[in-house]
Structure formats: C-alpha cells, structure tokens
Image 1 (tube, helix red, strand yellow):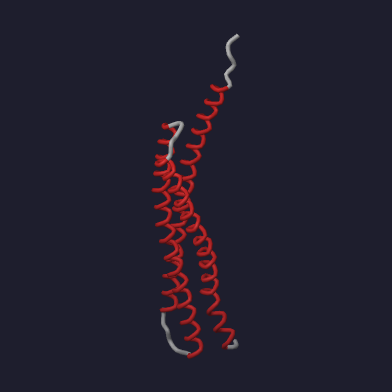
Image 2 (tube, rainbow, N blue to C red; image 1 turned 30 degrees about the vertical axis):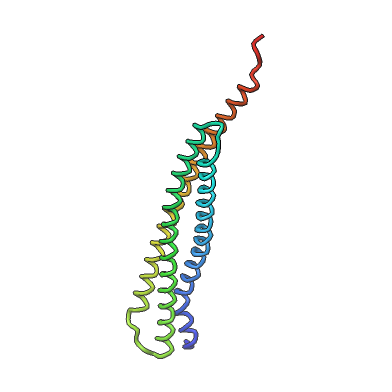
Length: 172
C-alpha cells in the first residue's frame, strides 16, 4: 500500500471525530448565546416588576418568583454548557493531537507506542462527558419552559376572570 494512503487512512478516524465534536460545539455555542439572552431578558423583566406599579400585586409576585426560579435554572444551564464546551474543546484537541502523532509516526517510521490510541480514547471520554452535560442542560431548559408556561396559564386565567367580571351581564 502507498505510504501516503496509509498515513491518510490512519488519520481519518480522529478527523471524523474532530468533525463531530466541532458540529456539537457550534450547536453548544448557539445554546450559550440563547441562555445569556434569556438571563438578560428575565433580569430586565424582574427589574420592571420591582420598580413598576402593578394592577395585580399577586400576579406581579408570582412573576417575580417565576423569574427568580428561572434565573437559577438558567445559571445552572450556563454552567453545564460551559462544562460541555470545555469538554468539547479538550476532545477536539486530543483528537487533533492523536491524528498528528499518527501522521508523524507514519512519516518518520518512528514509534509512538500507544500514545495516539490513549489520546483518542481520552478524547472520546471527553466527548462523552460533554454530551452528558448537554443532555442535563436540555432537561433544565425544559424545566424552565414548564415554569414559564405554568405562569402564563395562571396569567391567562386571571385576565379571563377580569374580562368576565368586566363584561358580566346584569341580572334581568
């Protein structure tokens, strides 16, 4: 077999793993931006509730509580995403290093021993850790959405009640 083809073949597996980890990293970066935007939005809503005059103090308090719960969840999400991104960067680095060592070994006919394999396994473990963090973060995201939906339903019930009271027909 041609030595160039041997080198290329040996380097393919880490390259595929690099590509996969990179795709996950791009998606995770987008999620970090969304969490950051969500935290800023919730903080702004909270500031408005604290400073404003409200027609329905009970609803304003319920919204404040919901926002505080969501901010805690989004803070947890942010930490999970940071851990996942760190793991993904480590995985990519390990896969690249394994690929470089495989290529160098083939070019120089040297002996790198098990080092490329160990690096690739460590990269795979880091990738697994990152996907685990992302799965936990998705569950936190769903929890935050459920909290907000519960409040929106409560808000809808309250305004439906106010509407009914405002347009009640007098008894005849």
